[in-house]
Amino acid sequence: MADEHERVQLPHSPSTSTFKDDIFKGKVLFCTGGGSGICYEMTKAIMTHGAQATIVGRKAERLESAAQSLSQSTGKRCIAASGDVRKPEDLANAVRKTIEAFGRIDFVICGAAGNFLAPIEGISSNAFRTVLEIDLLGTYNTIKATLEEVKKTRGSYLHVSATLHYSGIPWQSAPSAAKAGVDALSNALAVEMGPLGVRSNCVAPGAIRGTEGMERLAPKGSEDLIDLGIPLQKMGEKGDIASVGVFLFSPAATWITGEVIVCDGGGRHFQGPMLPYPTSTLDPQAIKSLVTGSKL
Ligand code: COA
Image (cartoon, rainbow, N blue to C red; front, top):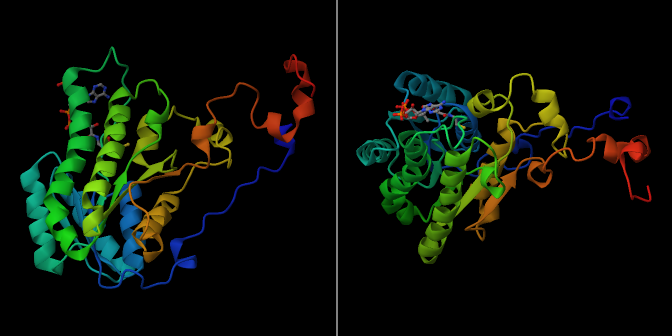
C-alpha cells in the first residue's frame, strides 16, 4: 500500500546551484505582481543573478516593503511603482520611473493576476470582466507600456499563465479563459517581435505551496491529497517557478520563443483518481480486487 512505501520527493534546488551568479549583471527587470508570491520569488532569483528591478502592484505599502526586502536580500536595487495593470497610465508611470532609475528594461514579467472560485451561473458579468481585465488586458497593457524599451535591449517577456485551461476546471471559467488568452497573446508577440530579437514565453505553474492562489482556491485541509495527485508527489515551491524564469531569461534560452513551459510536477497529465493513486503505481496487486478485465 502507498502508506507502506516511502514517498519519494525530489528536493528543490535553487537557481544559484545551476546558473552562474552574475548572468543578469547590468540587466533590468520590470515585474507586475512582484509584491508577493511567485512573482516576488522570480524577482528575487533574477536579482540574485545580478539584475536590478522595478516591481508593480496595487497595494502600495506591501509593494514598498517587498522592494526593500528584495534590495536587502540581493544587494541589488529594487524600486516599487504602485499601480493597477488595468490602467495604462499607471504602467506608463512605472516605466518612466524605471527608466529614470535604471535607464533600460531588459526583462518583463507579466504576473499580476486576480482569481476567485465562482461557478459560471454564480459569477456576474462584471466579475468575469474584472478577472479578464486584470489577467489578459493587464498583460496587454504591460506589453504596450514596455515594448519600446524592450525593443531597444532585444529583451524578453515572461507571462505567468496556468494549466487551468488545458481541461475544464469547475469554478474557474474566468481565469481559464483569461490565461488561454495570455498564451495566445504571448504567441502573437513572439511572432511579431521575433524579427527584432524580442522573445516572449509563458510559464504555467501547477499547484504551488504557500501562495495566495492556493489559499484562495484549494479546499481547506486538502494539501496531502493534492500532493498525492501530483506524479512527483508534492506541490511545487515558488522557487521552482523562479528557476524557470531564470532559465527563460538566460542566454541558454536565446532560441526559445512562443513557448509555454509547464512547471507542475506532471500534474496536468493526471486527471483524477480513477484508480487509487499512487497505490495503483506503487503496489498494483493491492488493488486487484477493484480491477475488472485486466490481466494484472
Ligand atoms: N465570487 C464571486 N464574485 C466575486 C468574488 C467572489 N469570490 N469576488 C469578487 N467578485 C465580484 C464582485 O462582486 C464584483 O462583481 P459585481 O459588481 O457584479 O458585484 C466583481 O467581482 C469585481 O469585484 P471588486 O471587488 O470590485 O474587484 P477588485 O478589482 O477590487 O478585486 C478581484 C479584484 C475580484 C480579482 C479580487 O479577488 C482581488 O483583488 N484579488 C487579489 C489577487 C488575487 O486574486 N490573487 C490570486 C491569484 S491566483
